[in-house]
Image 1 (cartoon, helix red, strand yellow):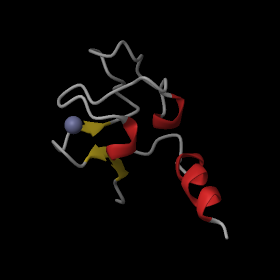
Image 2 (image 1 turned 120 degrees about the vertical axis):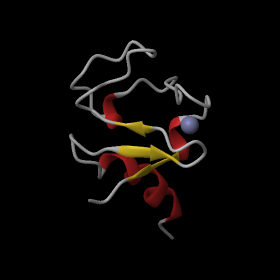
Image 3 (image 1 turned 90 degrees about the vertical axis):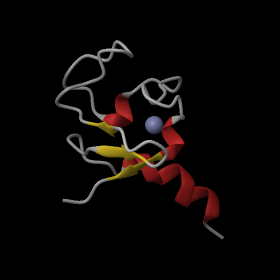
Length: 70
Ligand SMILES: [Zn+2]
């Protein structure tokens, strides 16, 4: 019975420099760049984004982003 744990642990597994891709519009959040539209300064990791942050292209919430493995 660790369903809840699985959901909550998702973001904490992210590395600081992980890039994530929006699965709706394929926008890529790169921590090196930050998000100028969302007033996120460069160097902000995805897990440090505010909870209200949304995809600047399609307005999806953070749940819709997937880690890019490279
Ligand atoms: Zn998007």
